[in-house]
Image (cartoon, rainbow over all chains, first blue to last red; front, side, top):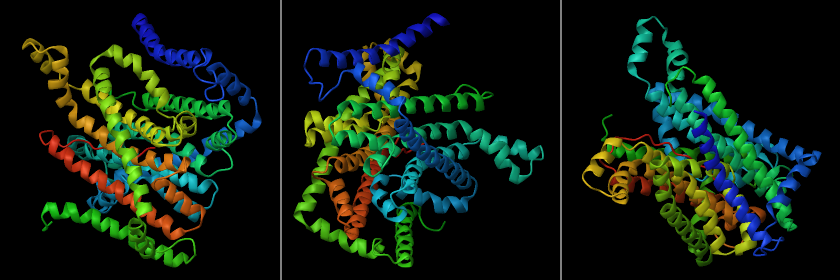
Length: 254
Length: 261
């Protein structure tokens, strides 16, 4: 089992290394002046150096806080509304057309309105993150919950589960794989959106660092926040993956 | 349910739109601040913007860039995704790289790409291309992976070459999933378009929106939100019709929409 895994890892690492090599090659052979494309080593060094800086860490914390707050709101609302719509036809009749209209709407375009309503502080960014992450979570919850096998519900009813508990004991667990897939998509989206919101208007956070660096043509500093958000995304994705494995330990492989 | 389904299907989103606008109208009237115009005021500004040739040209420029980026992305991503779905090696090769790229906000690459390619169409289309590619690759990958092995064997037994099997069996079988990816891509393209333009303030719909914001022309801000929103909803609805036509044979499919940047 070990040998094929190693080759898989090597195969996967190859393109990343190739990209890095290509990047380094562009710099070393003088195709790209360092002012436009700093060599990867310098970016990495700068990242390590920045991690020691408390200001940079504060920016990461600010970004993470907004990301989590928005994501959690999206999960709570998405799972709640999704379940409600799947179980109650009346809710479904209201939610479905609203989702049809709101889901394809580019939420970034709402950002100016959010700024006007909530000011330049955290609230506008958190709302934007939540609005963008909400729909994939809501839709996958809805589909997951409406695909629950009717037999499961009947068996639970026959075994004497009271109706209100059905939701918690049967439908929610059965929809869990689908919900978690939605959460994963929502998480990636949150990473992206929080960064964009910070780029558009902010005084701190990783996105703001990028914009600041771009204004002063500090190319190295422009790459650092990008790589940081990419790493953060990878780490969070990994965490969610372990959570998924833990929560779905009884489920057949999905 | 006395109304025919078709009418309900048309009517309910329309009612939802009107409902949202009504909520907006009431909220704006209650807030009664200068900076939040009522829905009616914003709607009245829409024809003004669309009637101005310069502004209209800007919006059409945006759409052109979006179409270029989207078309390129679809052309590249579908073959790549299908190849990944049918070959474990190709998948193992590309997957980690794509995982690394996925959480990077593509529009955030704008300042860097601008340094290389300038502020013109090239860099914006490239950013849209990057933003759209990933979901399309991912869904094509999923679709191709789920193709029934037996159909491929039958194809091979009947003497179809590898490429012919790809085009005649894998592509149609994965089409519903691919189109779901394209639909996501469409929404993403629009979002990336707006964001890239507001970072590279030079032309386009995003530029109008955020310039109006900076100049405190709130009527224009909200009117642009309506225009961009309507564009998103209209494109999505049009694509959905196309999708239904193309994959009429497929069973109703989970349509998980992701609206990401």
